[in-house]
Image (cartoon, rainbow over all chains, first blue to last red; front, side):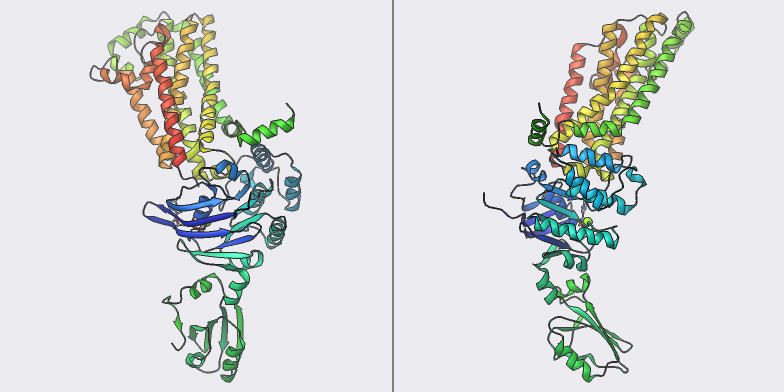
Length: 305
Length: 277
Ligand SMILES: Nc1ncnc2c1ncn2[C@@H]1O[C@H](COP(=O)(O)OP(=O)(O)OP(=O)(O)O)[C@@H](O)[C@H]1O
Ligand SMILES: [Mg+2]
């Protein structure tokens, strides 16, 4: 049998009465990649994920996961999928161990070796009822539940929320191992930074629509960075009008913030003439990244155009 | 069967045929046992004090003096006969009401409540069909009413030592129909909960329906304009007449079974179309 894509959606739409969920979502997640799904609050990440698992019924459009329809063939599909919900809720009175045992049994797992390795690796607290656990400690149980049966596809809704930086690194390592094993990871996130660190490709969703799908490298290259110059006097932003890919964000109190994409040398050459006293540069955050795909956004103006 | 083949069978069927039911029963264990023990103690008390009321004719006069008021509490006919005593204190009111409360509580919680709490999603994301989920939850509903039914039944049987000698067959039929009544209302709560996506609404709507059905059944014998409505009341089907004295007609039991099956089908259909979170 030829290998199908891990996930493929076309014109996938879900509305809740008159409320938008997601609109015309097209997605292709290839086998063996780590795919990041990026978007601000309420963009439609969790909605898309629930459609993938067959928890929601699409209003229109199509979706297949591991080559199967989540509604018609959901049992066979979900046997090969591990899911970590966005706001993970566990049974408050049961302990971590009771959760692991129940889910292992329900999944008819033959071996618990890998599960127990994960428990050790993430130092999961097993003996207390989960209502007595911190958010991070509950999240660790959720991670083990999603990974323990070595699923072909992992669907993780904001998996690192609540994890401390050390565990985030351990988790990123786990994702790399999973992908190296030929399995696929689909994860949602608010943070461009996080996704850039661990994903191969990224789709960005905003207000229910996919804005862009691209490789992380390409995105990074085309992604704007933010540069801030501090001058001793008022400077006319028009000076930068000759430089390609530069956009003014704000200019107050002798501080000028610019978004730019592409090589930095031409920008620096112009800036040097204006004798700045200080400069900082950093990668764009998610909101700034969106703006590059919404150039006509009212809050920004093109320099000199 | 070796463990290996056992696992393979379970693998083919997806989630083990009983895992979800087992989990729910486990989570409801404390509530189930509390209700069962509470009702058993109540039943024991009712049984044990019977000998002191047996000869009290003023009780029967009370019923005759204001039959409508007494009917509201499920009391009709003679209070002092063994059958009348058990009907009036247990089978016309307490036992069915408690069974229905337990069942509605579970029915509303097992899908809508778990979905609102967020604990249903990890379970629904297992290799299990929606139909399988509903069947397992119905199984858990049926089973968790059992301790209450069986314990109460046993306590009533002890009545033989307290001059409460009644037909065992009719006792079984009455208990069984009350059990079916509970299952029916539990399924109603399940369906409303899934359809509306709200546990609160499920409890509200099914309790209102249950209260109406109870009042219709209770007043059917004393208020003439309510009398024709008795045939739509599942309470009436189960315990409306004189269950311990006359038994429950097979047709009534069939109606209760039919209602439960209908609601089960409705539950599967609604569940298939439901959005779970
Ligand atoms: N069950 C529902 N009923 C009504 N509206 C819903 C439902 N689920 C999602 N929505 C709406 O769909 C939109 C997308 O929500 P979704 O939860 O997918 O966002 P998200 O990207 O996961 O956000 P977050 O980062 O906050 O988790 C929101 O406007 C939300 O209000
Ligand atoms: Mg979300």
